[in-house]
Length: 257
Image 1 (cartoon, rainbow, N blue to C red):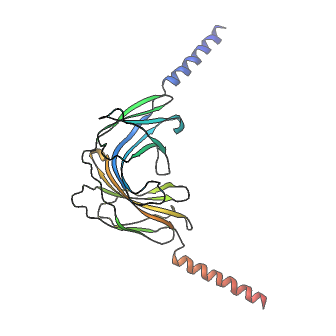
Image 2: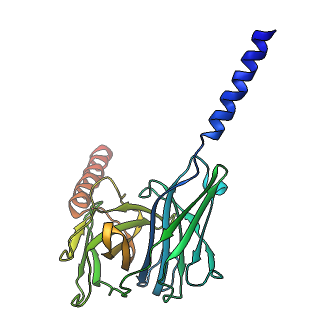
């Protein structure tokens, strides 16, 4: 009897220790930046200037079990809840909010909670708020599943731009499915690698111009969009398809004679 009671007590202690060891969510990124948007079809935001509150956190709980809020340090009455978003290019739980008041560039106090607890963080103030210009003449050159996204650079004199990135969004789902690595600010084109897109699929391509503060913390960004692009087979594939169809027709004619 004593042995059974001791075993029960040890089991209860083990369970308590396990739950007690569960950590609150861990904030892995907290960015506050100005965000200039060009006209787009899939993102759902009108063209214009925004302030973007953007954070990621790790947690064993579902996003529906988590809350994320940001409070403006210069006016604690300004509190905004952040919205969960996901996609293949985002490895962690992401929460963000776009604000149309781009003057709120002071620090924001961040709070993320899940059933295990609450973690506080800070979105640092933007040291040099600047609305970055959009890319010019953004267009897509078709080549099967590896289209070339090309653009002209705007006049960047007086701006502190550090990086260009390219993203692709699946128009049928609105999910961002691909992101390039960082490109130099002199880059004017990027070819989407094979294995990402499908012939017949409709996509929107997005070119982002980024400005960073210390520790690669995003402070300003612009987003130029291609509009919807439906991929068609590359010319060589169409020629092969035409030859195959011609061969089938010729074979049928011979059989009928």
